[in-house]
Image (cartoon, rainbow, N blue to C red; front, side, top):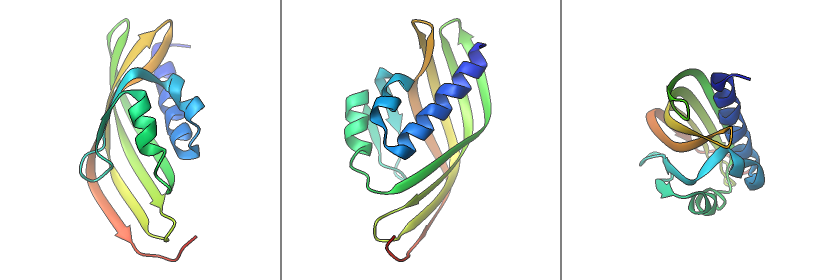
Length: 135
C-alpha cells in the first residue's frame, strides 16, 4: 500500500473509532502527543492522546464524521499534511441536532512503518443547531 492510501485509511479509521467511541481502535491512529483543536465551535483544544480520549469520552452525543476530498502532501518520507472537507452530524441525548461543515487541517507522522495523525485542526465554515426530541 502506498503512503497516500495509508494516510486515507488511518483518517477513515480515526473517524470510525471516534464515532463508535472505540478508544482502543482510535489509539493506533494517532501519535502519543496528538494535538487536536476543534476551536470555539467544537470542544476546544487538547494535547496528548490520553487527554483527547478523556475529553471526547465524556461526550454523550451520537456522532458521524465524514472526511472527504483529501488533499494529501508528503512533506518527507515520514511526514505529511492533509486538508479534508468535513461534514459532522451529532445528536445529543436531549435530541438537539448539530449539522456542521468545515475543513480538517491535519499533520501525519510515520512511525515503525505506520502513518498516524499527529495534529488535527478543524476550521468551521458553517454550523446549524436544531432543537429536537430525545432519542
